Image (tube, rainbow, N blue to C red; front, side, top):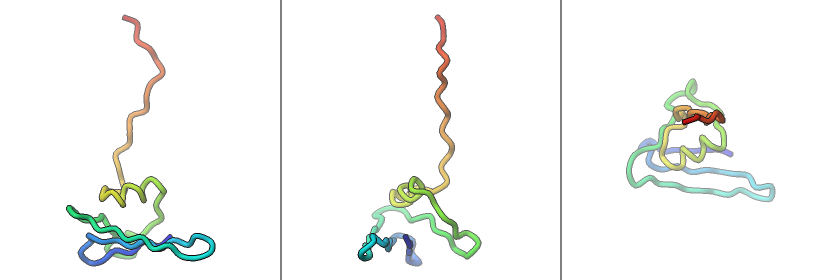
Length: 75
């Protein structure tokens, strides 16, 4: 999968190989901008979850969630 973003960072194209051909996805944000690397040092691989966050216009570095405890409180 390859991701491309224009200079304005409001539009993104995704090129995905499906085995027998390419799929091209296009996404344009109405409000806000995609968080996008600006130099080679910022380029990196991302997870499926980070890709979903990116498509939603979120940062790919989300704060960690608090793990739920199995302990029960006695009242």
